[in-house]
Length: 240
Image (cartoon, rainbow, N blue to C red):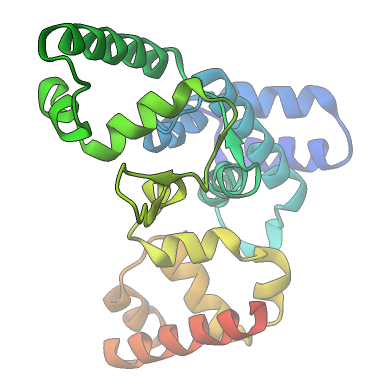
């Protein structure tokens, strides 16, 4: 991996249009990109497509990175890569089906044929799920994979209501992480007051705890917690 100074040097060159600098940054940071992609495995995208999206996010990070923030480039890159992949899943409307899902769909169809021959009826979704040790939603998704293109807004389930959508399978519980992915870091941070900007950088980009930030700023942890909530709410209001 490149050291801090060398990374900044290459970023500056890349921002000036130096293609060799861009290639060097991507090559040296390839392990970082791949580590981010792990959280998106089994989401219906081929690995090569994921890696391409990761590289797009990485290049956007190069273009938007501001060295005046005094933040490590690798720390800035991660949410940019995650955001690029999430935007693709949300906005593209359709996803490619991986070979693994296609293979699973083939096995399910063979099971349905065999079951029909023996019982003179098709198995229910729950029976298929039990046989393959899968969730019912996964069964429906896998069986629908042959109906391309698959919309991420496709209803899941075989009941009349079909209240769950495929996009719900991609929802993550960490709303703070998803919110930060959507923030235009450069523009939004520049609008914050000096102390607010420092709290955001220390908390979310240098991974410091509230206690550590309190010691850094000479205030209490309770004050840091209250300020953090106010800052995030302020940013949400600006983006809404």
